[in-house]
Image: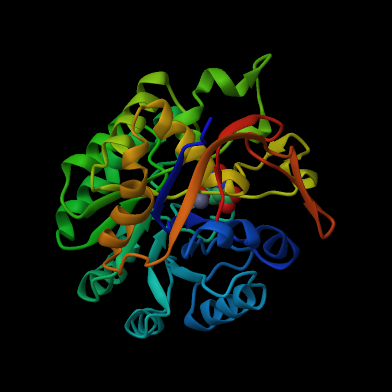
Length: 346
Ligand code: NCD
Ligand code: ZN
């Protein structure tokens, strides 16, 4: 039997974590295997809060290239006390693709994040003026808010205001995880949303074992109900222009994933990222819409050209290794040990 092969414009990953040092060396080849461009998130141990840190980080990534054609794009990490002059210059000189808002303590390495949105209004004015993108980790963290409702509260209490006040600003709600969030993205102008594979593959029922969360299925925002998963699949697979590929591939060495009962959120998908998306689109009888989601909607939203290279994906089964192990690092691969039905062949 002839295997089915599809050819699509080379994708980009609009939300990934490449990290630094040995982890960067270990994971970079997976992102550059498929993508032409990746937004490399700035939540490093020492977050990217200045042009000079961004330039240093781009050099570190470039030193480790496994492929010549790969462009890391860096968002500025917004803080309460940022240097607005440096920020403006960095945007003007295209050092930054935009800026990332982490509400303080919403996820890994967000302790330097923003405590009150008003504190970054001057930065948002600059972003709007420079027509650069605001990327948002959209969760409101408060001891009275259930972990499953953080996205909804962020939208109601914060995002709705920003959307109104900065009406020309392009905003991406990153890793949209709920029907509520996805509908907001779909119904508003100048809004984009990245969708991860895990939010279209897992629900909260999948992540508990004997009432304890499986650390390797734990990410922020946490995966939710079946209704949410179905809605995310619907938007991604319809080709809706506001939604595009962002894996949120977030590697953690297994040594650090669960330390003294504190589990670090983050799921490592890059070893099979496009294959996982292909699986989902195929299940939804929408493989013909994969290219729109993976390679067209993102560049259009970011006002960047479409990639000119093409890649081929074949429908054939293979097993993903359980772990990525190198440079004294061991990372659990999401879907590791399981069978996949699509494989990138070039
Ligand atoms: C990410 C990480 O590990 O840096 N974790 C995650 O669960 N998604 C941070 C983030 O994007 O929230
Ligand atoms: Zn992330």
